[in-house]
View: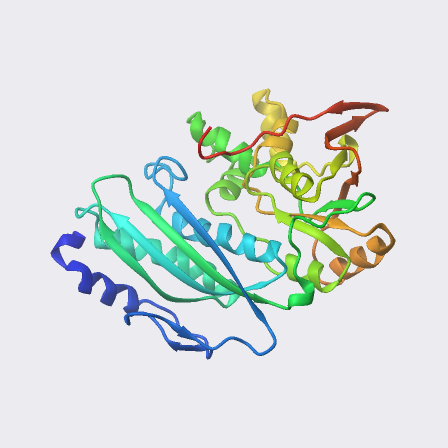
Length: 333
């Protein structure tokens, strides 16, 4: 059945019928003119918005509707975690052709709700529209955090230790397989990087844990690439950064794929993006305490370099230091 057969009210009714139980903070949710939520006492609200556009952010012939919905939530949650907050509510906007199947919408929301269930996130509303162009999904996520624990990108200080919360390169390796139509079903490493690309997990709780340490001066998620997102911190803070090549955490699956295909895994690690791990600047005197705190919560943490006074990005290997040209995803380049 196509959505033009059930109309706007039918679509909203279908979405509401598969929705999860709403959080106690939601006073009015899906179906009304506006959602109403009661903020948690003592918390500030955090907002982030993402658009997912067919052929720019996903390929319908390469991804399932479930995967598209799940990844959209993961991308949104990463932004809230990067600010040190917890994701709570989601608004979903859809612009789609009238011949889109109702089953597609159901599976898309199944993916959204599956991701939401892991983090206690409630869909509280959204909007739908027909279009003649590509399928477009807009996600607005609302989170909450303690004002004193916020971690914006503009407060890094020279001497801060750079850390990341997980191995890098898997998502970019998966994208390489995807774009080059390379078979991946028969290899465990290939399947793993495809999972990281098509249905990644966000850094659930990692940003909140780092923020609670009160030792993080700046933080961002690694969505566009390590070098691209590190440059954002450096520019916003009027600082530079020195990366240690030997300390970069390369995902084992990405290394295996690179070895088999003859690719440069470091390019995926530095410039690939979509790993959805966090990049944070930690006060050096607090590093051991932060490492212990992350360990207590079963989270990984890797030191990869430090913030320096000199502007620019640099990488050091075997005593030789080179300038790094940031690369990564840019919608308009």
